[in-house]
Image 1 (cartoon, one colour):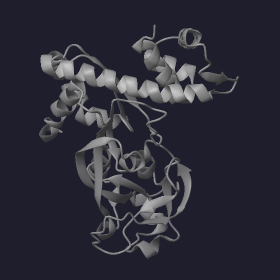
Image 2 (image 1 turned 120 degrees about the vertical axis):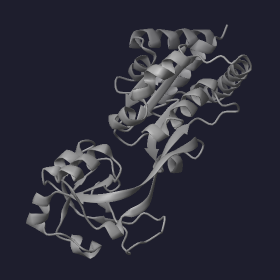
Image 3 (image 1 turned 180 degrees about the vertical axis):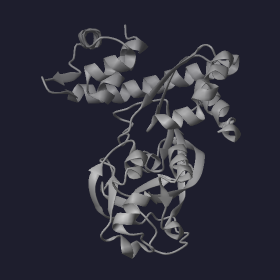
Image 4 (image 1 turned 180 degrees about the horizontal axis):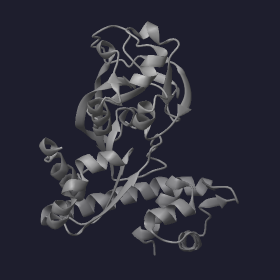
Length: 304
């Protein structure tokens, strides 16, 4: 007899293409996950995956079975959500990911105890993924504090705005003393930046070419980027290693600017429409646990 638990494990292995990653997500051992898949294959009388030492991939039957599995799981989830919405029950595991830990520090963790008292049956898992997020490889319930690219790549996701801010450009006084202060984007030719290894390209500085531009189109200039990092860019910038893009309301940036370790530059050419979102899965009925989490923490915005 097919069990929804076995189908859920199969779908997760298909998403991750890895027993190890699936085991990590479910807090089980890879051997236990492999055993569940083997038992399901024995029940079906068909192989679901082709296994090799380097990776696994779905068989032709596995691809067809996955389509039907997703339909079954969607109906199962919709039924569960409908029942929970009728009873006012808020429970289950909620997995949340952000692209930097500071986002959690500023918007969630100060009020986490209060949320837990209200919803003690919701089990929370927080993760940080600093690289570009692919929801097929990293299936979470909520993607918290992610820029517009995620919605562009995966338009099936629902989203709510978290905040808007100018995407500024900053440098240290030491750096400006060495390379000079640019007054126009055309002055950036001999400058260097701290890039992002997962950027496309990794040496692109976001800067409007026209002063006080209100265009929503992102414009960039490509600079020499001898250092690329997914985190602590503000610290590297304060050390004089290059200029950076950063949201003007970032707490680290505000601290460095206040102490004089960083200086805003090219302010008339900042990209003024940087928006950060909460993304979550589009389902027939919003999951009560997801709705409770988002509504609670968005209500705390005035305290951020």
